[in-house]
Amino acid sequence: MSPVVMPPAGDAVHPGAATPVAIVVDGERVSGILGQTIAGIIMAQDVLRLRDSREARPRGVFCGIGVCFDCLVTVNGVSDVRACQRAAVEGDEVLTGVDAPMGFVGEDATSVGRGRSEQGDVES
Image 1 (cartoon, helix red, strand yellow):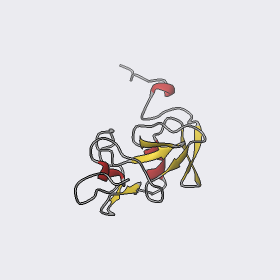
Image 2 (cartoon, helix red, strand yellow; image 1 turned 60 degrees about the vertical axis):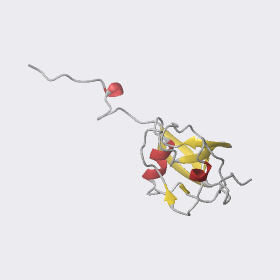
Image 3 (cartoon, rainbow, N blue to C red; image 1 turned 120 degrees about the horizontal axis):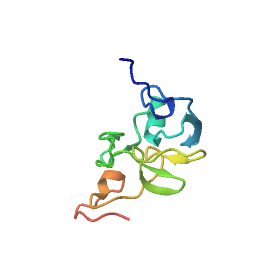
Image 4 (tube, rainbow, N blue to C red; image 1 turned 135 degrees about the vertical axis):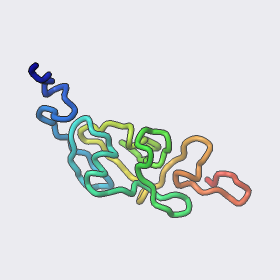
């Protein structure tokens, strides 16, 4: 029997030629491959910290499937984008929460950079 050969375009292990893509992360131009997530491109640059928690603890990709919200970034002016879920597009401008203020998602506003008062209210 001869081995089954998958065409390069459909082979995830040995894909065909890659299309480069360039994005800007916190003002720095970085390159990746079309189809990669923003998180994948950022992590390929040896950057693991995407933001800080309210307690000033570093956060980055944790689950990688869009459940934990630790990888939130701002993309092209839209805040609260999960970097692990968003495919990079040529020219995307990404701001991490390390140097940029971010909004909040869901009921846990403290998880993405906005503080809570002692009474538990979200501070504006």
